[in-house]
Image (cartoon, rainbow, N blue to C red; front, side, top):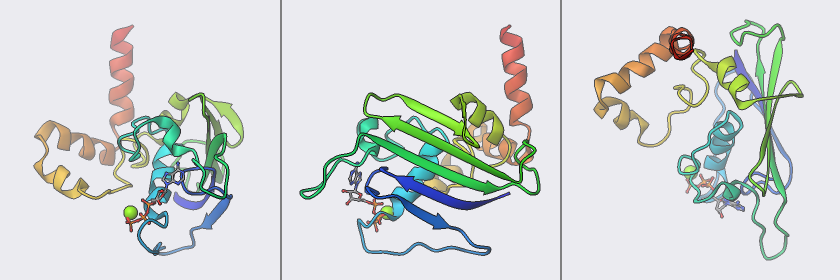
Amino acid sequence: MHLKKIEINGFKSFADKVEIDFKKGITAIVGPNGSGKSNIADAIRWVLGEQSIKTLRGSKMEDVIFSGTDKRRALGYSEVTITFDNNDKVIPLDYGEVAITRRMFRSGESEYYINKNSCRLKDIRELFMDTGVGKEGYSIIGQGKVDEVLSTRPEERRKIFEEAAGIVKYKTRKIEAEKK
Ligand code: ATP
Ligand code: MG
């Protein structure tokens, strides 16, 4: 499984639709300060369901929608789609490609889609559990994350290993079953 493509439309500084293809190997995104490099990483977190605006470097959720410039009006919604190559079926769906979309309006309401089918955030969370991708995943190592991993409490650090070992799904199901 690997990231193939990201389409960003109205997210933060991306007023126009931007499509980035990730080819085999390493992709580096370079540009001057403030040009939107980190906004791309934010877009990936966001589409996978990030709900913490602090993590997304804003102060209210609306801050992820293009807020306009002197020459351009603010937009009404933000939409991001990421497409994974899933030929190895690491994502437990019988599709060679899996596209995740999130759309959010200024009202704060978010819509989520898996391969264009409307779904719940919970469905996306479950899909990516134990894949290393997603909120608790280790696929995005932000600034300061390495220090955090080293200095964190052992129980917290254990969560990273559990995700890598692929047992989070079972632990989550156990906890849910015990609640019932
Ligand atoms: P650096 O090299 O300093 O890390 P960067 O390329 O990572 O820079 P980003 O942090 O991705 O830059 O982008 C910051 C820019 O995004 C700022 O110019 C900011 O005004 C713009 N921006 C953030 N949110 C919005 C928004 N909602 N609407 C319009 N522009 C936004
Ligand atoms: Mg940056």
